[in-house]
Image (cartoon, rainbow over all chains, first blue to last red; front, side, top):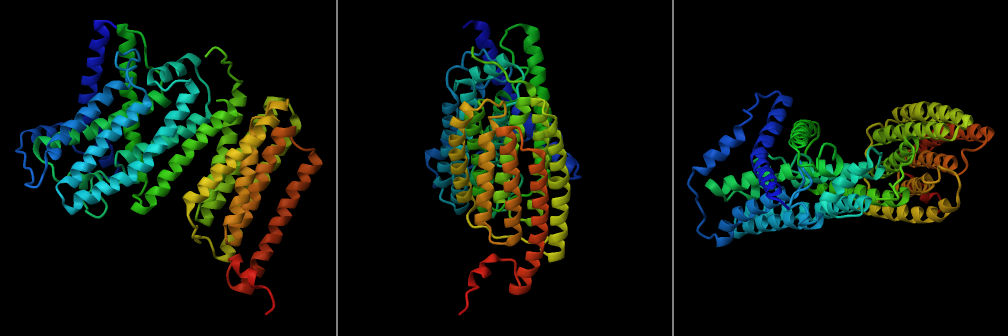
Length: 315
Length: 224
């Protein structure tokens, strides 16, 4: 591992941090356009973060240190996860550090702390949101793991880096199992990021909210960190999806042009898929909470079918 | 991966079509609305047509093209149209069936898929046809359609399950033996059509007698 590798690693980390609010803004713009509203500015999320960072922090009297620690922990987890996923180049020093199972563990560590902190103050909303979040995530996690296992058994490795290079080595091939796993992954992405069939990111209507209910108690820089971590989570899921299902363009060389091309392709994929997410959210309706187990059950079913098809068809 | 040798593109497509067929079988299992069920049935027919045409191209068996055309005409055009007319006449277009516990049904469905994949694996090892991969999928979709017929209580979804079962059988026949003789295929197609007409008449009879298409009422046919 040379110094250059570490520099690139740091570069990816900074890129992820800066890009995440932009992605949120992009999805928001498309949602506004599709709903015939006047779109907010693309840099609106940055302004919001800036404003929140300059505001005073107010903490409930009954809060324990857990509430103070959680925003930093959440942001740290998401930042670390973002550096583990090959976004532009595969040959990064940290990319081989953990495999996908540890990645799921990192994401759920963040979730557990968020839910605990939501229950910490003792308001009804926080506990309601935490319970709902746990209901959604304990159903989404097995589906996500099955998706990972499908891709892992295709490439005989659970390391994200070898998954990406494994696909690149074999060229174009139609994998029925991968198509199924891709759809399952998309469903998990929508559920885990609080997107429309499961949760509405824009609502503050107390009866339907999940994520917003959990973060009602935060303010100032704590809220800013949580919002930023949430944007990072969406970016993480997007780049995970690219690494697993659209791995073309990722480079393992360290030449300037290769990296530039890979970077442009990555941004292009984000642009298209961000708009696609907004379209998907606009055409679908939010489900009742008690339909969510059915929805995530379908995701799990698709992922299991994918792995079964892989063993039957060998592809 | 040193042992990697990619299959021809047509075969990849065939595997994809077969997988989609299985997916639609699952979707039918969990679908509550009758109208969507008919649309799904039409899609399944279309994918079956494509897969038969693809296997015809792959194996250079011209007679399979005829069966593809036959499938297209009967299962994509005529049968869904007939079903449409039927549910409009019966006034059940927007009928929603209350299904009990979809996740459990799905889990049982996965069990069926595992069972039929395991069953098909040794057979396909000894088989010499290049379409052998799809045998397990065909078997699974037959069993899933069976289960749909068992779990449904209304008459129309049961009949759609029966027709979907025939789709699975067709795929099995294509993948195991490169299709049945033309006479048999024509006969089967005609049988399904005639069966459809008879079912239609039955529906009206059932509804006239019981005022409902729920076949639970038929359990009470005994004389008191």
